[in-house]
Length: 245
Image 1 (tube, rainbow, N blue to C red):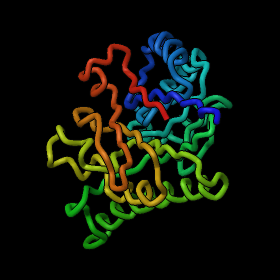
Image 2: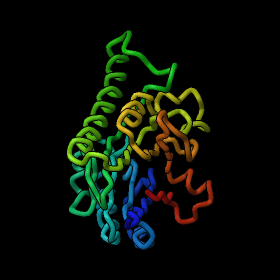
Image 3: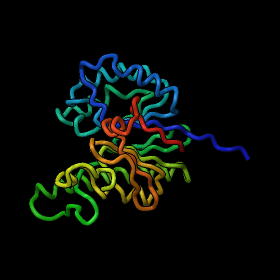
């Protein structure tokens, strides 16, 4: 029986591209294209959510010769230009997901930004002021979008291997290292439930710059915090985390 070819996934988050970064990422994209079959960029594509920053990234991405799958992060929403940023960056080779999924090389990728709300027994509940309920509702809706994207993969491609691309963390383990007081703003356990129930193999996120590289959600789902500062601290001189599936 022929052995199934492994897919090499290179992941990074929080690249925070600035207008002054012209040419800075070309060599990174060229090198990662040699080593990986798919590149994941897990949010905070831009530094201040400006379309000029997105234009710089779009130019840099031309050096990438393998498919790219990404999601937006909170920085990309800063100026309310997130839809424009997505439009500028994505093309036939670059897929910026927002509750959608895409199949590349036989692997299904589902992506959402995610949101905060806290973890486990300290997760915020839908109670109290309207502002608090709205905060929790945002996390609920992001989890629902993730679940629907995964469900579509299951429906269209039964038994396909699935990978989740997020910005906010679905588990506490990969934000440890950050001040506990800000845990509720770094992710939500609501994102973990669809990962476990839908049998996702691995999930990648960023956002927590001084969190922890690896963790695990219920059901054995591998979770990786691939924020660029974490990868650099871990000794990745050309920062990306390689995962074979």
